[in-house]
Length: 225
Image (cartoon, rainbow, N blue to C red):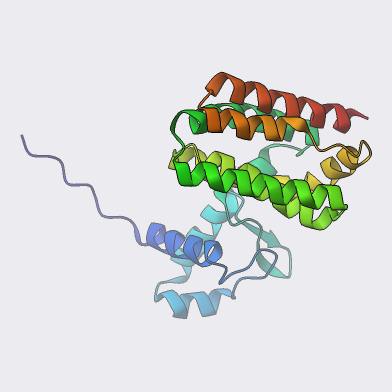
C-alpha cells in the first residue's frame, strides 16, 4: 500500500513560515513594527486576505502584537517564549518552577550523553560566569550565567528540548537581574552550578538532578524575600 501524499500547504501557511524566518533571523527585530499591509502584499506577491490571515496566526501564538492605530509589532522571536508571555503573568517563581521541570531532566541527559567537547564548553561557561560574579560585573554575569544554562541544556542532545528551553531562556532574560541581585547580597555564587558541572563530567545523572534542584531552591528562596 503506497504512502499517502501530504496535501500541499496553504499559501497563508507558507507566508507564516517566511515571516517566522524573518523574525527569527532578526530581519524583523523584537520591538520593531513590521511593514504595512500594502508593502507585505507586494513583497510576498499574495492578496490582502492571505497577509491578514498570516499576521493573525502569528498574533495568535504571540509572536506579533497589534497596536491600535500604530500597526503590528514583533513581540517574540520564539513561539514557546510567546506562549509563556501570553499564558502566564510571568511571575519569577512560576518561571523558576518551569526551569526546574526542564533543567533537571536536561542536566541528567547531559550527564548521560554529553560529548567531551560539550563537557569542556560547559566547564568554560561556568568559569566565565563565576569570574564575572566574583568581580561584581553583574551585567556580564547575567549574560554569562544564561549562556551557562543554555550550554547545559544543549549538552543533553535533544533538539526539541533545546528549542523549548530557548523560549524559557528568552523569558529568563527579563527576570535574571532580579535573581542576580538576590544572589549578590550573599556574595556567594551558588555552589550547585559547580556541582552540576562536576556531575556531568562524572556522568552522574542523579547528582546532576540534585545540583539543579539545589541552585534553583536557592533562587526560589531569594525570589520570596
